[in-house]
Amino acid sequence: MKLGIFSRAGQLANEDQAYDFGNYIQPDGVNDKGTLASAIDFDNNSPWALSFWVKGSASSNSTSIIFSKTGNSNYYVYLRHGRTPNVRFAQRNSSGRQDWADATLGNWNDEAWHHVYIYSVGTDVHLVYDGVNKGDGGGSLSQEGLEVGNMFYRQNTNTFFSDIGLDDAILHQFSTNKSGSIAQAQSLYNSSSGSNPATALGETPDFWYKFDVSNGTTTIPNSGGAGGNNLTLTNFSGTYILEH
Image (cartoon, rainbow, N blue to C red):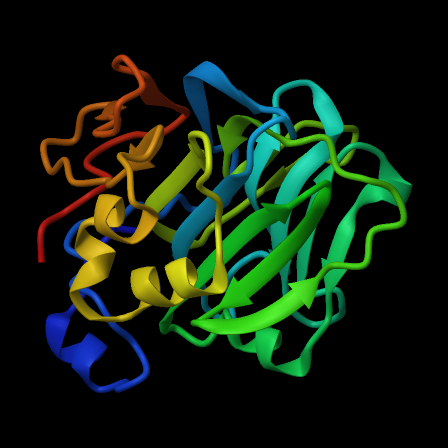
């Protein structure tokens, strides 16, 4: 499997990137899945936001699943290169998915870090990529919230596994009178706000996977206020996160 090593000098070479990533996780795309100890289920009664940093390469799977719901092939989020859509959010059925095919989205596999922020607007879903608003994904049916049980894996008849670098994955359902926004996404993308999502969101994230362990264990603590939910990785071997 690939080792999660990130060069600070490499980051600074790309002035568009922000935030000191520290440790991150990167499976090899073969039989690897991150299974959440407790599935996440956000309905549309309260606004929610999904934020993560991702790094792909030309050798990354052409369809890289970031999040999915255990046992249901119609609930997933993926990034794709080589053909469109480049970003898909599917949380209902095939006709309810949200797709984005803007040409600028196709660069996510260029060995650089990119920030993805997806948030609910009523029963619609919008995307902000590297701080730039990409708007509504155009789904023909209303979405039904956000449900996640796995990372890197889609459970269906054509099983997908993904080999992408992933860091600071945030899944959050807002309290009363708060919601996601373009400004929040830009704050998470720019400078020091990336290291403290509570500042950008205005409240502590429900789930925040920082991937900051370096001891090679198979449990990654959740540092948000979600009562100790852990991401348990299966089919990994060896030390999968190293400090740079």
